[in-house]
Length: 228
Ligand SMILES: [Zn+2]
Image 1: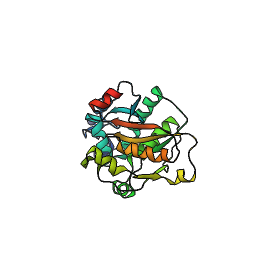
Image 2 (image 1 turned 90 degrees about the horizontal axis):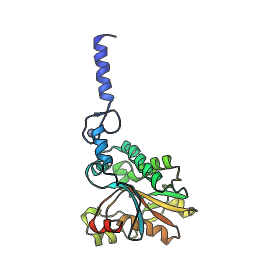
Image 3 (image 1 turned 45 degrees about the vertical axis):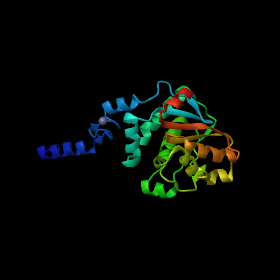
Image 4 (image 1 turned 120 degrees about the horizontal axis):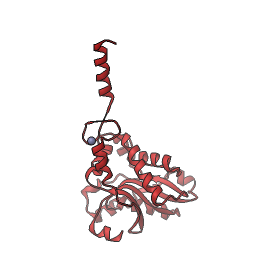
């Protein structure tokens, strides 16, 4: 091999190496070692169920710092491949805390127009990988988003509830046949909980049991933490 070919090969190797999504340095895994440590530092010491306004929540970590940055890169910088390691960590926490097998996983749907703009629904991707690892059955057509809602962050807590009332309806699969076991809702983040409560209400109103919601990250608030 000539020196030029070797140089070209080396350059190609470099270009083909993945970039860390947080610091843009070359990384041999999804994240560089430093950033992976930073993301993993956001994990709760022992993730477990936490009761929040009639809906038990299981969260892997805190919605801030490197985890928040990772979720933003995943959703807004078109990095769907981040679903795999994130779902893997979520599944490991699930196994160590509550490896229930009789649950059907239902990702929180996005409105079709918004999903078309983004190109994917982050909750669907996380749920696919999570179910691959946990072997829990996945039902992506359990719920459908019936109404476009105003971006939640622009609204006060009271307005968010109103904004999400009847935002969901039963999806094709559950309209045809209800699941025989309870539903585990799955989403990327839990902030005010309005979206999750609205989704859970839709299922419960139709006689479908909801075990709770599993998320990668939960925003912490003083009052909420005291309840957990
Ligand atoms: Zn990095």
